Image 1 (tube, rainbow, N blue to C red):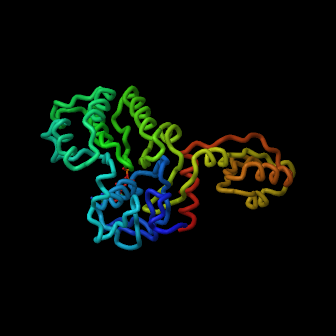
Image 2 (cartoon, rainbow, N blue to C red; image 1 turned 90 degrees about the vertical axis):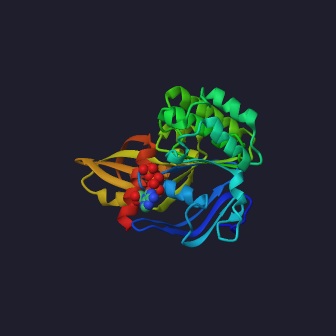
Length: 306
Ligand SMILES: Nc1ncnc2c1ncn2[C@@H]1O[C@H](COP(=O)(O)OP(=O)(O)OP(=O)(O)O)[C@@H](O)[C@H]1O
């Protein structure tokens, strides 16, 4: 791991903890790279929104050190780094209900030096959003579209999106993917999004950060993750040898699915296959794992460790 102010990272966390009455986030250690898309994936209540709030300085770091865009999250910073960030929260703020999108945008334009009205209008048009209706009168998806337009209008260095597609119809979802891909085209932007939508993660993410019960289960390069993690179905040929499966290279999970039949979750598929054969097992099939299966496997391992 590198220093806190390494320019290659958009976010650096070192032993970071945030304590609430009934929930602890951390200790967290990770580097989220700049110029990339990182998807945060984890079950409900695992701490994704809390992590976003902490990165925005809205909740204090109780212990450890954190930096966002090279700025340390401590009492000494003046908060100006936040003008370089675009944020879409999971839930809309009730105190903004009486504003229209255009009125909210007018507020935002004063706060963000790089605010671009043309960009805002273009985004709103592309999303087919209405800037003149009170936010409280918009449907969930309609409000999401205008909030996204506002979050992206100042072309921020770092975009933090908390479940951005929540409420969007399939057409708006497609527009969102297009806009986020366009946003990343310049090469110097960073997108971090929390998502439960597998397809969104598959299409957008360069990296996946798994989080569970406030702890990081791993940060993986997406293509490698989907290449490496496989399910092997194997059948025992002789009468003995099932115990040997515990030694399978890269073994992440093992279950007996029938008499002499086993299901192995592995992240070194070629070595695992060779090993199983050498132990006298017939390999019946090898399949890529879905994102939720990988998460399930990581959670089981974490639970076993606790
Ligand atoms: N305002 C709050 N005050 C106290 N505890 C909170 C508050 N908001 C969330 N929590 C708790 O913090 C924990 C993490 O919640 P958080 O919203 O960060 O999870 P999440 O991963 O974003 O979940 P989801 O996928 O459901 O959006 C949960 O145990 C939740 O009950």
